Image (tube, rainbow, N blue to C red; front, side, top):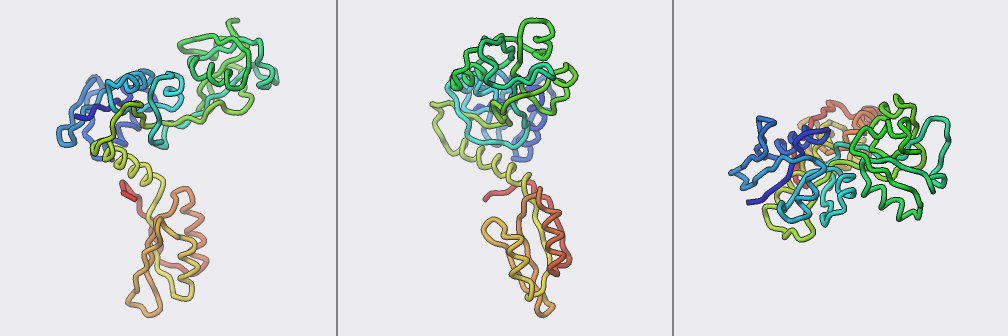
Length: 281
């Protein structure tokens, strides 16, 4: 039976559970449950702290896990990313009191507080920056005001918490993070694992695309198809109305309104947009 770790709480938990349900997997109904068996798919789901998931997967106790890219790198364990899930986006940034105008070159000799010491130490080592890492478990924004650090390195989503603490980010992001599927370096791929990855990848792609249907005259068919090339190519079917065709194609969700405007301008009509819940490409 395949054993998979899922975040039990925090920003990744709800989205991970919804994605697994979209992929056809049974999920817990009580947040106090620590283990759930999905007999139809022959999987055991273990609900663990997101920070601990990489450790369990890296040790080989669990074959796969859903966690954050930042947490995987910070753990330093023997596990690797195999699929990005396109939710839980954040950046890992340096921050200092607003108005200090620090740059990365100013970090040498400073104290940097973080709840991600493994990630920060690797970055500083790669950049050959000699700074002192102050390890904290949370509330990193208070470290400078309380006098234990000169700067901080932390996960930033909107930056609101930093601004409330009188801090501003500086330098380039250390890391762009999101939810990912990980596997242990010694995990042996089998059909159950390949199926799990395909299903989640299908949900990820479906969340990024919509299906567009429209009618267009043959005069403008080539121009319209160029706007909606689809994955392989658009599906074109003749209409009963002479000289007209129906076209169906997948387009990026983020571009859909611009594409609809462009299709209308070249004469497409009866334009419809449909959400996609899952796919295999």
